[in-house]
Length: 351
Ligand code: NAI
Ligand code: MG
Image 1 (cartoon, rainbow, N blue to C red):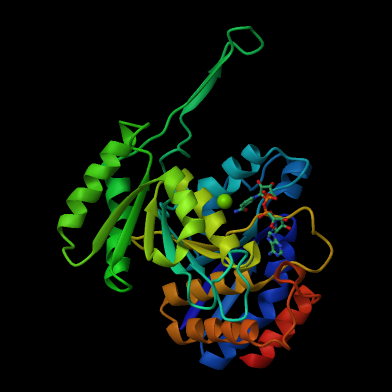
Image 2: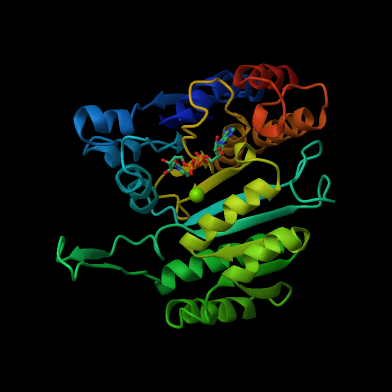
């Protein structure tokens, strides 16, 4: 098989982790006998600063031709975050109808959780985050700027289609895992959108009698991610809540540098996008110590999506093996003194 993948390294440590991991992906193609070529797009904040746009006007049309997209990170100290997000990342997620955002949180053997008493395998859940609407819908505005009665309105949008497909994806996933779905809302305070969400969970749950359903309010869920993370299997949440909860999921399983994600276009009409959960990490940019494993695991999710499951498994195994090996190099976020390059070279030797 041959695949064409658009690579958008982006900003900050994005190019560091995406460029450093390329040789790993070349190894994998060779080893598993397929042809996967990356086409690099230097889109992002530098482009915005020089040319006034994060990507060209034809950006989405160019990307549409690819089998998948691998993205590093977006975010620059000199460009407001709402500009970077709303002019590159969100247009791709929405424009390509990448409705399902899948973010696993796994405590690997050899990785220490900041939570006491947890060891390998104790934490293993996946968050299904609604990815194209909800609280991140671009609906609202500002009125009377500069006056005393200045006002801002930001609306959330929950459609039946959008809500039902993320909920259904979570239930489907649960049937292949431990059979439990936790739906996270704030139905007590948001009595329109979240009660609607609950109603759809109810309807879909009726079709999956073998799946256990748990309902949590997001504040309690934030606490329970810390208090009893071992009890979660599949968590389903809106765009905003899923975004916040997955940072908690990343840190309780060791590091932002380990958390991968997939933005899936269910129909297959458009490419899906794979990216580490972390941002551009301006605090460590240029130091050569960014953890590349979140990018590697995001690529593993990409191979799985493309149907190259052996390649995907090989990457998961190599990462698992490296983390379990006390002699293997690790980056400072995992308590080591290794560089991005050390981790990549070690991983290549394991493949
Ligand atoms: P961040 O994820 O960039 O960094 C949070 C902390 O985690 C920092 O201490 C950082 O050094 C550490 N970290 C993150 N990735 C790491 C890695 N691979 N290896 C080692 N340590 C790592 O989040 P922050 O600081 O809130 O945001 C920085 C910029 O990134 C902002 O402009 C923000 O808007 C953007 N951002 C972009 C995202 C994306 O592209 N999907 C997601 C989150 C934030
Ligand atoms: Mg986030």
